[in-house]
Amino acid sequence: MSAKLRLTVWIAVMMLLLSLVMLVFILWVDEKGLVDDSPERLVETVMHNERKFETEHSEIAWAEVDFYTRGVYCAFYDEAGELLRGVTVDGLNPADIPFFEYEIRTVSLDGDEFYVYDAQLETFDGQPVWIRGIVPKNDDSGTAHTTIVMTLMLLPVMLIISILGGWMISKRAFDPVEKITQTANSINGGNDLSRRIALCKGSSELIALSNTFDGMFDRLERSFSAEKQFTSDASHELRTPITVIKASCDRSRRKDFTREEFLETLDIIDEQSDNMSSLVNHLLSLTRLQQGTERYPLSEGDLSELVREVCEDYMPENRRGISLHTNIADGVTARFNTQLFASLVQNLLQNAYRYGKEGGSIWITLGSDGKKTTLTVRDDGIGMTPEEQEKAWQRFWQADASRSENSGSGLGLSLVKEIAELHGGTVSVTSAPGTGSCFTVVI
Image (cartoon, helix red, strand yellow):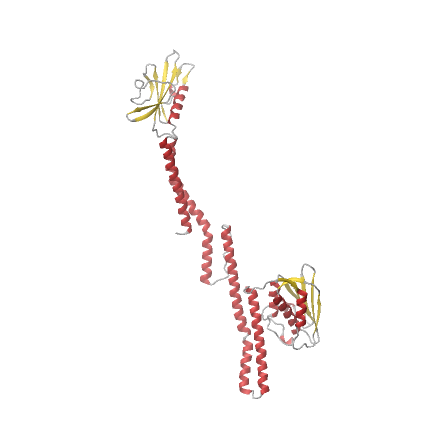
């Protein structure tokens, strides 16, 4: 059975058991006489008729007398026991049962038991008049019998209401689960990872479950997108160095005859292999950062010391006369990952060197105001137009290679942006053609 049906059946069974228990209890109470109101009704009826005696005229208001009500028989007799008016039970007459004022008695007749109660009135001439009330002991007009009848009448109604109410409540409660299931099946069947459950109505637990699924779908979508992006980027960007390597090998087989010619070809292959290795490493780093498949813990440390070490170790093969100037404040601390932040600084320095001018300069500064840490890398190279600045963070985008000594993989600034965001920071650039560029990282 489904959860909705199980819940509905459970509610129905519990209501049925509860009604049966209450019914059995009422029957037991009625059988034991714990709630027997026949004597009370008998006395009440007799006293009611006694009050109808008009003391002013010493007459009885016969029109207002209840001769039979709620199972009680009532009759009026004279002193000799002759019936004046009323309704009685055959065999229960004064000749057999003498009058006895204001006392409830139990009498038997043909195996049936009755309650009898008498009261006396006096007329204007001093002649007594007796009022006798009689009610069967097993009278079914009492509260217990009425309760049993009402219970039997209400039981089916309550049971139907309980079943319908339980079904409606369970349906409303499990509708969000069906929506979650349908959305998950549609994503699985159609391979559309952009769909989301986006549950707005339902219990807080189901909304939390929906949000968890949506978060999982977000991660899956990012993972598949990153995988597709990686495959596309790698196949596109590796095509050129592979083509160069194959062409170099083919040319070497046909035309290289001296040792120098072979070495020259090997240098080309080695250079392209380095480019491929750098490209793959950058792609893997970007993919890991974006997917979160590789954790990079952040810890408090001396950022000034790290930046100084990176600047000291940074030594391009050919300086082209470019000088590096540093202005690094002492004691700047922050939460950072040593490996990633070192890569960020290296990529910014490589970018400044690659697009710097001959005999130019690179300035790197680091400072903190107590709330945020700012790193800037500035060069006086070729610079960028506003349109180029918007594209600078895109994968594989590069400034005009003809204006620089050599081109890179086009992934360095994308990696810088990802690392800055991982540290809870931002990176921006200000630049103008012919005046250089200034990259600012704030964490």
